[in-house]
Image (cartoon, rainbow, N blue to C red; front, side, top):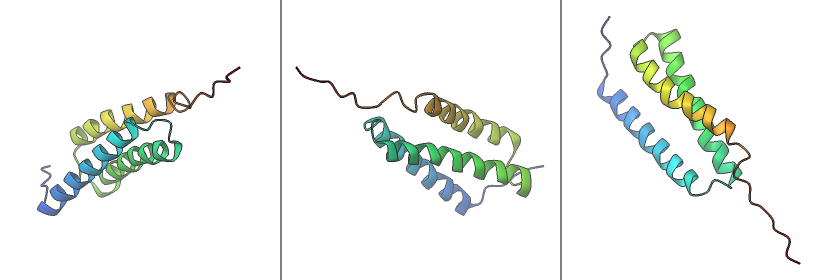
Length: 95
């Protein structure tokens, strides 16, 4: 089966990629900002859920494309979960 990407799907994917890159870039410089970290984390959950739905229910995505998305989103989800509390601001008491 051949999957065609329409122009609107291509542009949607491009905008999603730009949004995700922007979130990741801003989050990387503000790791102690929990709401921003959560939003960035959820963006990977939503993206993977969306593409998984496209593959499983609508059959509009090839397994090879889902695998690529799964590698990036899955790795990011796991990594962010493992680092969830690693970037807390430390309060140092001064004598």
